[in-house]
Length: 375
Image 1: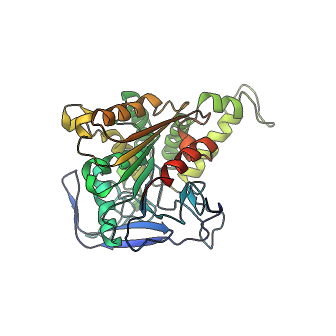
Image 2: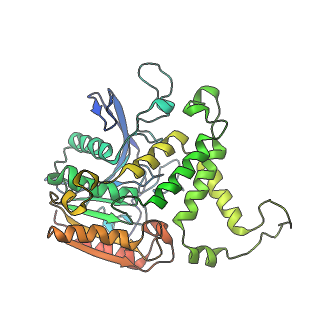
Image 3: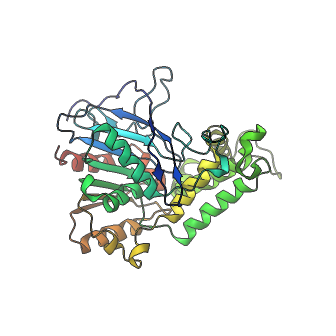
């Protein structure tokens, strides 16, 4: 393997589409844009391209850093770069911000072409199928007929799975990490509570808060705090925070006294400072709606029958949001179809967030699999 190092400075790109895209909600966007980044070099055969699909709060800045923001590392920088598991000396890697996002792609905070004002709550609901369709249009422009691999964790893993169903001839390998074939009732419930925190914020203004010059930061902050609890494991919280109190903590009050409270407040405040509330609503709804087996009478094997890709499915021992049992449902459905599938269940203390961590065992599994991807 080549020397492991940073990808270095990268540039955010934006591509405008003038052909409309029809969405599952029954409406079309006449014009739209996608923000994306690329790392590595597309080979002459255009056969070494890898698509990275982001999770709920992710975006196109997957690896490297911006020249004017050297501390702003991509969210999967520990995985992607020269000599890293997804080696940019071999692969041409593409990260994209999905439709409905708030990091440069067309979404609720973009201006409506008819009014010149932000879409706000009028932006249509988007689904995982819509994202696959939009990503395929980006691939067309980049001259990529088929991805060597589509890779994603959590909601990104669901997109990788959907690619193998919707466009089976255009993906040779799918890496489905810390994902599930559909949400449980408990997960839908968590999403609804998070949405209610936003929807009931007085500054939400039915999704048109842009017009009022305010942001529903309290609701978004609470939504993120709730979500963050579900991304961690009990063991991890116990080890990192336990019942430790802050040095300046008071007693018999309702201020921030425990270290875990301080951590959650910090994460909530940081997230509310840069993420769009309407985008959060859209992303969580897309999670709720994802269920490729629904149109096949609940039979996931039937939904995956047309897939042609080879699969790596990865789960983490302490992930209770998308438990290993959910990944094994995917594996079993693939095996029923006699699809080529490898499965790894990684022992990790990090809960659902484990797919983002620089874990030696996890990264060794990905590196070993990707070394065998023919380009």
